[in-house]
Length: 198
Length: 168
Image (tube, rainbow over all chains, first blue to last red; front, side, top):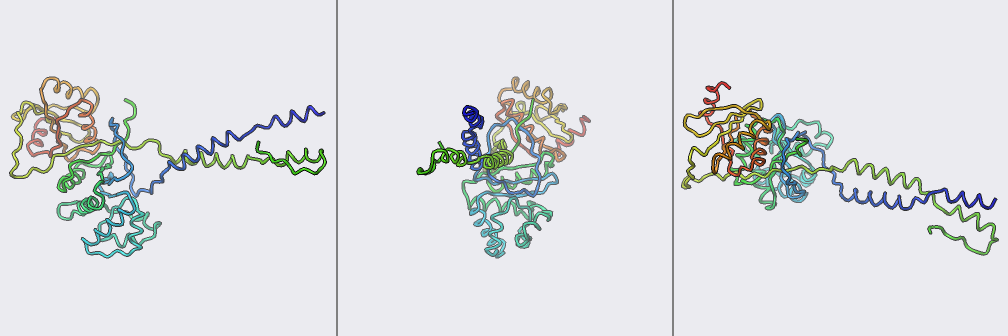
């Protein structure tokens, strides 16, 4: 009788090492995960064999959607706040602290400066429903150029990356690239996906 | 190890029975841990996007002298719509040929020409119908074929005429 009791206790497995491991992994993933804010546009990037990785910080992304809309994004909360104030100065728009805050939390932006105030005052849920028309980058009204200039004065280390959709037409790309060259940005990155197969 | 011995002072039989009850059931904690683990594993993006660095020439100032290139060393690629590539050598009275983005297509042309022509200069002229994908692909081909001298140039009306005339 005494023997049976001893065997019983030995059948329960000690879970401690497994739990240790599980928590180790949880901590690892928790610390490495970065939640990307929801992007207002879907970009299907072209593939390339390039193996240079895009750095995580100090990146200015110019996204170009399939329809040819241009979106602008820059990382860094404080950079964004400063950038918006500079843009406001140039276009003579006063942004309230609340608007500045909501801008700093935004992801890609695709509205002309004129509509920006109205856009920032919307609720986040409302904003998702709005179809953003893209940032004008024509030679007549080139707001993208201003965004780029002020981003560079705000954060001189910023690297410019173009994230174009594979089916975006070349004329839009040309407009964006010419804007950059006009603003003396001659080095930039094209974001691509890994080439699959081949 | 993680068991706590009960305070003494009671009879031996009782102490033994209580010993088992102090062991904590770890199952819910493990459940939670694995739930979180799966969540974070799923949400983590594993592959960072790649990037291709290109350097465009600065806008030439009016007083700058443009370097002169022998036209025999120039290979022009025109990216047309529907993933077509028109290419020709030289500038005066060129013979336009058609190619595509497959391994047998433009890559062969580039490798052949690069072997034949010393210090070849490639001009990439994307037409308005071409897609961004085409531009990235051709820049990628430049990388693959180890061509150092290439430039992204605007298409000219002469090139458009050439393509029309070639009927390819």
